[in-house]
Amino acid sequence: MIKNCGIRHITWKYWHAPYLHAKAMGVIAAYDMYNECCDGLLDPSWKVEKKDRMSFCIFRQTLGQQMLEYDPRKRCYPGDDQMRVCTQQHKKRRASSKSSSADAFVDDGLSVSNVKKARASERICETLDELNSHLMSFDRGTNSKACEVCGKKTLWKCVKCNKYICAPSGRNWKEGCMVNFHNISFFGLTRSDNADVHKKKTCDWTPPTQSLISRNKRRIRSFCEDIDKEKNGAGNDNDSEDEDERD
Image 1 (cartoon, rainbow, N blue to C red):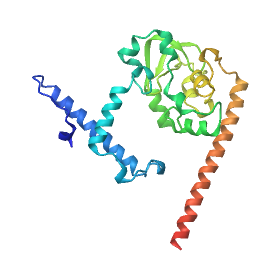
Image 2: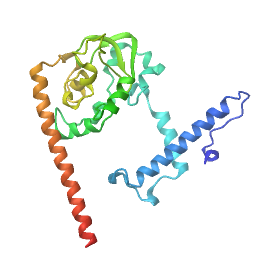
Image 3: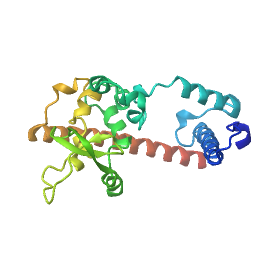
């Protein structure tokens, strides 16, 4: 299949060969992931019959077409903001670009569907291991930006989330911006949530008060309980269907 990729050309530069070989392996891995998703084992709604699936040739053509038509200025994927076409933009145009998370939250404001999508996103951490992976990705930059949680200027950035968040200085852990941003109870209160979830301008955002944080926490807890009940109900229905089939 590596030969079928056709990613090769004659060159005197010896390092091109392993680079092109690795790129071909990436295309094959992407096609394997496509077939795995089409099997429907990860999500039943993704299932595609084998006769309707793309062949490896059509998959490569579609992949090439998407690569040619995609504009990094859309900022749909991590790393797009580091592309040359994006760094040459004026700062106001960079800020006005629509984030990829805005498309995920279709409903306006806090809702069960938005909370469900937030829990499934990479930002929200449900275990200490997940939180540790985000904390280990924090990097100190050279240009300061407003913190997503408190709004103060900070140089620290969560690379996995691509968001600027305050890091504790010395033994001062009182603010806890790093933890709050990755906590489901704080969902809907950050600067980016003001635009992505509530469909408002980021410049109109103000840091949440303690009463607003408490009220938001109660609403999120109620939504999570409804989601868990729905999940447990679906699991019980599947178990009963399996028992009926066995009988």
